Length: 392
Image (cartoon, rainbow, N blue to C red; front, top):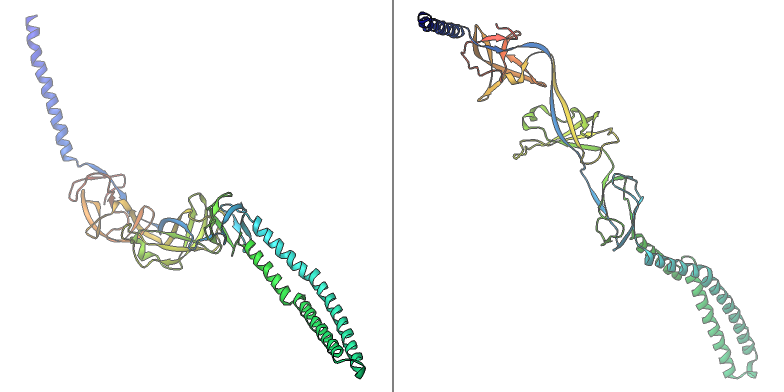
């Protein structure tokens, strides 16, 4: 038993030594074999360069419409989003007093035309009869000669003059009450003024438009000229988007864009660039681009959020690598390639930029193995093994 217990430490030492040797061998092998890194091969494929940006449906002109008179808003005939036409009644103020004024003025004009004018014509007829009678009486009196006193002749002459004056007055009254006469025009003017006061309680659309917002509700007291509705005139639909300033060189007037509203992403429509702002917003680093939609879909509304994509260039066969494989330092673009078992910095010249891909116009050839930026912490000069795409 004593001899058996004495041999155990020797065997344990041998086992430990073997493990140490094995670990050393593994470390040595790893030191001789470089680490593997994933690579992607540069290849030729079609590439479309687009400028993608977000913005809104723009309303270049907004108009607040209101009544010309103060009062209580009685009725609103339109709601937000409604399309209105020129002359359409939009809202009304309480107009009992103004309506009564119109009724009084209309009745007065009717009185002039239907009562005063016939009465004036009858008075004129009677005055003309009285004048003829007075003239005959004066003639008879003057023919009596010495049989008539001077006073009687004077009285007959005065009676004739008075009858003539009454006839002239009656004729003037007829002229005043006749259509176009002073009395008729005055009554018509009073009616027009009363109607104008009534019209000031009604809000009508001056042109075709769309209701953006109701600024007051029935029952509200509104002052003259205070906005009741916010309207946008109908016409071309405009978009304004803010792409990053780096896209300025690719955008120009007349380019077509595909657009969609965030609320209706599956409905795509065409827009056309009409203006590229001459200045960059320094706070956001963006530029304003205006587009017109010649055939807007019915669902577009002012201030809707939209996305646009402008195709600025296309290449049927471009040498491309993933965009995240390109590093840019001090204005120079370069990639890490795997050549002869080492990571090598390769300066490249960039061309078109597509969705997730970028064109290489010089510096690489088809089949070159490129290390993606986020693949591993690999520096130029490191020994590596290409995995996934092969090496040159």
